[in-house]
Image (cartoon, rainbow, N blue to C red; front, side, top):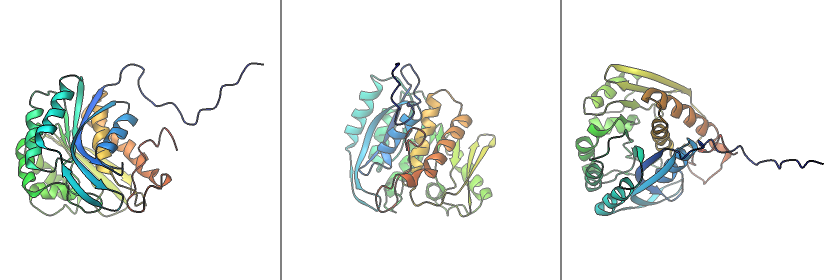
Length: 284
């Protein structure tokens, strides 16, 4: 009798057959694995790319709190960037938690010769409410990194802090703030509406010509949303590395994130704000 193939526990990973494009994440480490570099690597992998990483800070955190933050010395951050870019053919770069003005300056100098798209996620506050960006670093980010970004991806509180104003309370106000951020140098701004009120979450992509795309999704009734911002921006960077244009990359990443949030309760990780399910399309 012919042998029957053994059933596989989950579908094969959707990686391309050849060497996948390389994406670099420059961000902090999350010891609980739900956000930061760990979330970036998971999201980039799930979206079919190879993830390299530069660690900017080591955090002691779980789903309930960030108890310690230890910034990596700026010269070590710079050395990591130089090591990766001198050897790996990096297509896109995602910037996450940078913590201090010294680290931001080191990152800006390290990326001086990089010509690919940079996705800047201005990580400022953890899901638990803990601060992940020093006050002195905001000015450095505005000066050194916003003009380098192909895409800036703030949530509403982050956009407000960058602008020194209150968080937007309507789509019209979010658009106005996004256009103000656009004037500070990035090529495009994605205003993320997850912190807004209502049953529908609305993200607005704004370019030099105005609103490029409006992406909506039903708000999912879950507390397991740790790492959504990291995951979203990492997925966008991955889709850009795969060759999609910006609007298509944001749309694909939005669809991926919505699936990861919808499936988040399947994981049951931790007692606080658990992570989204990065591999929802691969295993359950």
